[in-house]
Image (tube, rainbow, N blue to C red; front, side, top):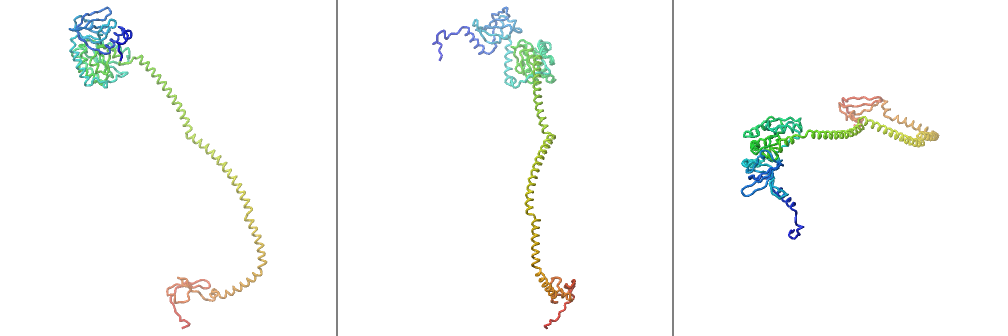
Amino acid sequence: MHDPLTESPQQGAISVSELNRQVRTLLEQGLARLWVEGEISNLARPASGHVYFSLKDDSAQIRCAFFRQRQRGPTINLKDGDQVLAFGRVSIYEARGDYQLIVEQVEAAGEGELRRRFEALKKKLAAEGLFDESLKQAVPALPKRIGVVTSPSGAAIRDILTVLKRRFPAIPVIIYPTAVQGEAAAKQIAAALNAAVVRGECDVLIVARGGGSLEDLWPFNEELVARAISACPIPVVSAIGHEVDFTISDFVADLRAPTPSGAAELVVPDQAEWLRSLTATTARIASLGRRYLEDHYQQLDWLSRRLSQSSPAATVARQIDWLRNLRQVLTGAMRHDLVRRSRAIELVRARLLQRSPAIEVQYAMHRLSELTQRLSNCGTGSVVRLRNQLNLAERALQSVSPLATLERGYAIVSDSATGKVLTDASVMKPGGGITTRLARGSLIATVDKVKQEASSND
């Protein structure tokens, strides 16, 4: 563990300036801004315009520095013996090592009751969630119409109109007049907000008032105004008092501006800067558009080529070329095949000629002629002899032929139903059909009567 007692004085010592600097850092970072109540004493106003005094109570005092740029409103009337509330941050004046309060705002101590009411209402509304960031609406980047809820004769509206005219004069402004101080102010402010909502003319509202004491700004700490701002569907910018002034309206509004002029700065863009940005954006869009068109021109050319290649005419042309090539190939193949077949036919023809039926027939006829001649020479006598024998046999056959018998007047009778030759009349019955074959023709008859003749053996 580091022990500073074991080090030499030169090693462990720091300068007075460094010590005061570290103490100042600890004070400013360790303590938040706060209100201190006490009596003014030793008040001094040097030519620089700054105010230096002490705040004391019965048992202690603290030096205070109230710089000129922080002095607004009635604080210029401070004098020894005044009981005040001073708001600021604790620091140290390094050159002398004086512990002091850097004052940012001074109020009469009689405002303490208002301060307590302020803190109570702030705590209540915060518990209800009216200050939640999730409820805040975004202020439009370029509003179409701006509404201002303020006094039409106060310095705040003049400051707002001056800034709006300088930054973006083309945007119209509607003033919703209301009192901004006094007992009736809170109701009028709430009514003006409701009127703006009902009329629906604006897309952003500025609730504004110039600086003043806590009592002067009190209408903007009323619960009625706070709830009207919270319920407003139009984005609301609160611009009450000066930068050091905080009201309940600031916490419930969608956006807080340090001053009315600051509110005008926040709700509209700077026209020149906006035009420059618009010009740059337009140029960029044009560049992107040209690049987009160039890319699509190339794509269109590519698609056009593809379309030309895929068009019916191109397809038909390719098919015609393909058919023409096929016809040439087919013609060559057919010609080659015909040549091959012609050669094969010639070979077969030569072989057929060698084995021609005409030659074979001619040879056979020659052979037949020789055989016929030989047969004729060898068989003429046999044929004559056989012919004579045949004639004799024919005459013998004719003599015993049934046909010769029929020529002599006989007939052959058969059963018409069965075709059997009848030799016995008893096999037929009256009504049966018979066929009688004569030497020339046949007779078909019906049996009327069957006559049985006695056998020659009886």
